[in-house]
Amino acid sequence: MSVQRSRVRAGWSWIPWIACLAILGVEHEATGAKAGFREALSKEVKGKPIYVVATKDGLVARTVDATWSRKLVSGAVRGGGMDSRAELLWMVRHGTVEVMDLRARNASATAIVTGVPNVTVTVRPIKRESDAVTIWPSGEGLGPVLTLEWGPSFRIVQSASMDFTSDGTPQDALKAVSLVGSEWLRSVTARKLVPLKAIPISEIATVTVPEEMSECDQDRHCGDAAEFGKTGWKLVVTQFGCGERCQRGCLLLDVKTGRWATPPSSAVWEAPKSGFVTGPCGPYALARDGQHYLFEGQLCRPGETCRQMDGPVLGWLDGTTWAGGPSLLGPE
Image (cartoon, rainbow, N blue to C red; front, side, top):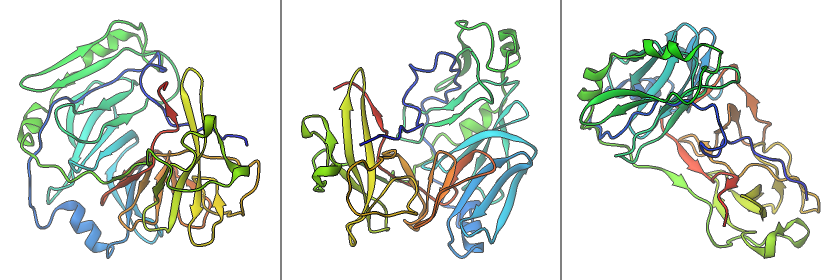
């Protein structure tokens, strides 16, 4: 059996040029706004799942059936990410880290950090169970580590370990970085979080994998599985092996038909066979309908080939359930 390696980034250590902006230690407020921005858009599209994509023309929200779209901000957005538990939408635009509060009645982009060069930006709370958001730089290259500490006080700390940012800009450019949104950060420090929705892969086998499709060291982990939303499928581990690190490969199983497909696509289903190419084990971002899902910038519909979007996909505007887990694991 061959293994299609996942492109999921698996931690910090393997990226020598990584530079990160971390938002640390925050508890967020409970806003019970009845007509919040997210709820208003969901009502407008009658509950259809909405995803957000960063395009060259701006940040755009779209329904999965492509019948509706709304530009949220104008201008080229380098990338961004969704903190779905705090309902905050982060982005980098024109060298500025900005955030939109999806619970606000009239959501707009608020500047938090200015003067940010082309480095990796990570919004990573550590004192609350919320989503980490990573915004990757355009192109390849080296970069210093840039950290915004968000706790009792606010300060920017930068590493001097690299000489250049990822676009070749001298590290001196980081001296222009400035925290301008501390008052806004303070205004949301009591926010309560939406409960985490996740369907992890089981740690014991729950599916019997046909012998000709099973390729796991010492028969470990084959058959470990996760329910895949409301599709009637299971995400099943059929390949597992360890070297310096462990890697697993997964297939989708249609429980009713007993047929299998290579994720992330679900366009082609086949009977059990030897040499079945495995795909990534996730994590997959399922929409609120439990049917549509996102994976590495691709929008996937049940029974169709996944489609690459016209820019980085930030996530679902109206809630996410995570299914599966990373394909690359630590050593056992």
